Image (cartoon, rainbow, N blue to C red; front, side, top):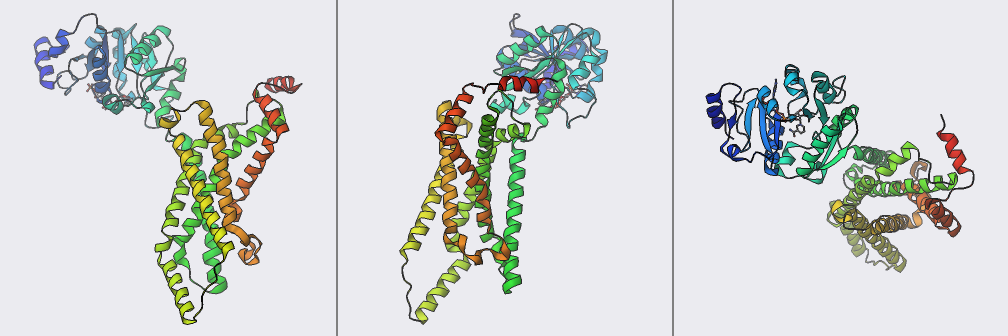
Length: 480
Ligand code: NAP
């Protein structure tokens, strides 16, 4: 409805009057009428969607005559008049302006009040917005809902991340009414219990990539550590011991050494928690005891760890592809050729080196191919099309194979340098040797788990078998 229409109709009927769009006059009386307080972004988007779903909508506004364009078919009234016309009122107003609702308490008595509000920060107020609303209007039944759905998504189409409505409230009937409305809007509903859960719901939209935080910190930490380690071993060592300035290597060579190291370490860290969990189950002789919190959290971020590891592998591939066009490499090749021509010499083709380089490159490419496959299958659009067995086959079996290939790629890269004393500058091993520690341990432990006697016991435990006496132990642990 347009402002002009609102002004026209409202002007005829006094301050509390109905400003009616032409369409609103034609709506059938049996369609449920809902009230929305606030004609801002959220109020308008929600109203438009409710109208499209078949509801009638009446807005309650501070300025019913000049509240701007509203969805076609909506009415606009003063707050008090709007409240009287509907049993369910959706409050699309920021919490700091809620005080006007206290004066409307008599009109809102017995109504369902839906609180959609969010805050800018956590713990901004001593109580949750919905609880505050309930305190202001004790006669109403407040339900917290829709705060995780954005106005933009309501207008432009709901995405998976925006399709779920979490609700909580103390009145079962009130929650039922809101749940029905959300379902009709095409949203999934999850009841989180009484109104005391409102604060938790209000904190949801404030979370910024919660499951990415730990993997990102780890990636940054590992990159910084290995970069500094290489800087000391390569650039500073060359300067101090040989008086050479090779600082130009900081940009490409060192980056291309650090990326695969971080990638391999993070890939192995995806598989380590699963192995630790298996050993814990074997040790406890049961699967019915909770894992420690840190292990739970670690397992929950394996997908993010894997995707970041894949990003680093991509960077390694890209940096490797540019090696032939680097000035330093072209200079070295030209220089070596000129020396050979000048001295009238040829080099002998070494079949062992050819075998070594080809195997090292080939196994790296295969590892990267499988890495990409793992990444693709972790995308929701792909994983949703796979059965659980198919998904776990790819993520587990293919995952370990990827780890094996990438670890072998690194071992082959080291080749015979592991035994060369000159490799250990200032008695420190090169970065790639350091980074082999975690994947090698993971692969060894996995091999142990695959031993038939161990595998058999673990399978039985995972099917519910418990070592005699374990049940009593678990019960004792649960006792206060
Ligand atoms: P908005 O665009 O600023 O609209 C707020 C509306 O509140 C105004 O249009 C106004 O409507 C009313 N209002 C402003 N000051 C008032 C006062 N002093 N007294 C009474 N009413 C007043 O905000 P919004 O984005 O629609 O957000 C509204 C609520 O929805 C907020 O609590 C927000 O946290 C929540 N929410 C928003 C989104 C989103 O994507 N925007 C998503 C989830 C939840 P009238 O001029 O008609 O009175």
